[in-house]
Length: 90
Image (cartoon, rainbow, N blue to C red; front, top):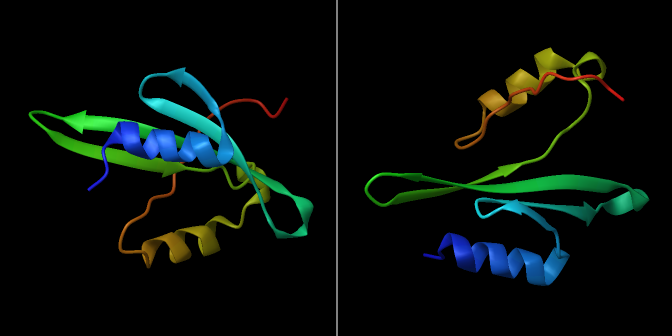
């Protein structure tokens, strides 16, 4: 299984990215149709040695998302979550 350093290095090699700190990497990927998606990789370690890598990607502003559909889709995933970050849209 790959370590955080290996996952981060492979991601940086493919998409470059920005490292705000040692446990996070942000980057953008190109999607079909010419749009781009902002992605975040984060590492979390639970003691003594259980390591997780989270992949986060915003899907839109809360007032523009069909929450009923989003919750139903995410609820069918084996691994996945839906959350929000409070802030202004500027």
